[in-house]
Image (cartoon, rainbow, N blue to C red; front, side, top):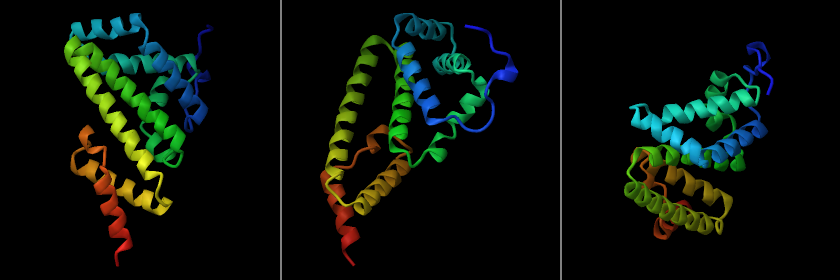
Length: 181
């Protein structure tokens, strides 16, 4: 690859949806490779933060894409506000964040601890999927009310993973409150 000069790197505006999706896919592919997992694990053994290595990997991807790494990282912090109405991108973004967290956990935790955390994470994702399937049965206004209640629950629980699911009774209660005068 030809080396980019800093003046040729994108450093203004906001990353496009296509650029972000490309980053997410490349990061997922890289962090699945054994040599990259070893790189993160070795950094942790050397008392470095795993997230520092995953951030460096993201910066390397940005360079490959012709994007100034600092600019690219700053754009990641703006995704929630800029793309809040793009459901597909937001789902991909949260998957990207989860992939980064799991890559860090895999490097930092003992194998049995990581396996247990992965099992719990998978269980939680299954519960979230069931909740979303159930929610789709409701009117869009009701879905918005459910998501608002879920957001409040997550804020109150300081965004603990266990707060990311509402059970069927909680959903029914939210709908009934909306209907009741």
